Image (cartoon, rainbow, N blue to C red; front, side):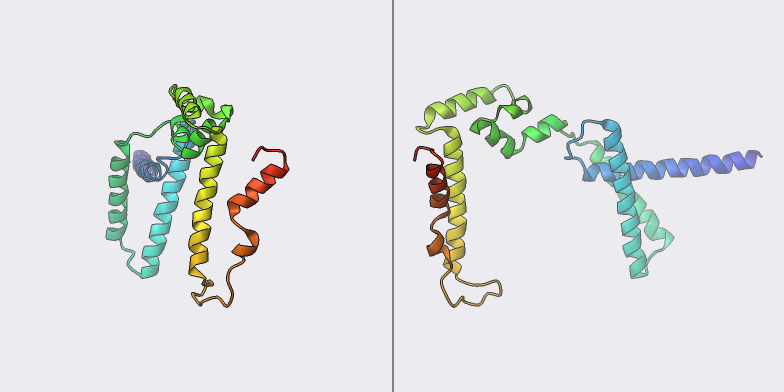
Length: 195
């Protein structure tokens, strides 16, 4: 009977170490994933680490080089990944969401629903930007986006080639449609926006 408990304890320890290695590998992969719940983050990381281990084993076995040495090398690499990911700091979910440019632009354009995700200085930045520009900030942001779209369309129209790289027989339909910015501005003018 004592031999059986030693066997169970040894295998339980091996499974626990493997789970920790899988967790470390998964944690390195989802470091920037915004997740408030630590238990959910641990579950996702462990499952992802196990999937990575299984896929690497599958590839190694497909190549015909699956040996105990290779498996131990993979486990050693997972241990290094676990140690590497442990020292890095991960931003909380709110800070990670606030780090995106889209949230900041939404707030600057007038969306107050994202205010809690931004630092205290965001209100001062919004006020300064509104005072500096001669048009509403939301219009300035929309104009900048339209200008970027127009540049992309101009580059595409300059190429005059189709997907296969063959010169097109006719000019693109860009002349018929006009500039993207004008289309949007005309739609805004028709809806009562001052142009």
